Image (cartoon, rainbow, N blue to C red; front, side, top):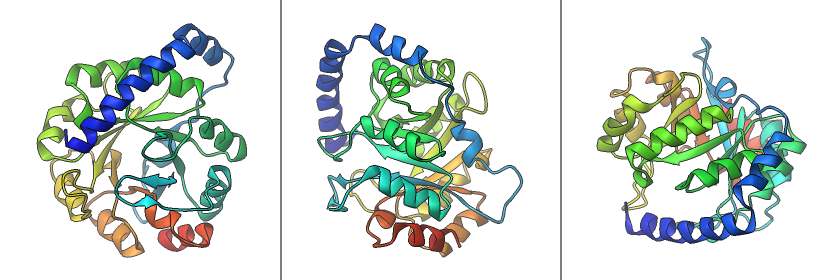
Length: 268
């Protein structure tokens, strides 16, 4: 892990321990029992034959350690509505508070406002957070390979499947891709996506060519999600030419005055 990731993970461990005291697991399980079924995040974004279009996971993000405050007039529900109007297939919601200005409560609020499935994007390092995500209404969760041991990835995937949630397993380095590739889709296909983070977590620079290079190492490109550094329809065309039809875009769209129009233009 980079120093930034180490710092965030150390803070997250403290936050999780506090959350376990504030809301014991039994409370989360009772809340989950009262919820309806999850929305099928995997089905919403995976291409099933239409190779002429990209599917967008649009991200709701207030700020980041590298960019600072991205949007001052930050209203998660209003932003999600604009993404939906612009043609997004799913929503990614940052819930980390300290570094990204997010709130877990935003997931339920977004799901109440639009019919799209919602991914909880956070630093998941404990099974409690997966239960917490489902109780908060999340349909999918992000798992960052650089933060987790192989045994944890396997255990977390099993739990996600049991709770009916899709996994977006994110990698950056090729060695981490090789480390986790055999576990993608375990224990059942149709629940796991493989994210390629184009942002170098050491230098914080982005390059979509990274996804193009990594795609050559993956057998089933349909489950690939290219993340970060995507700003134009031409970027989407280049990714499609390598079999990548799913993209996760946040900062670029969050900076636009009219998010719905910018979303439509990106997907045009």
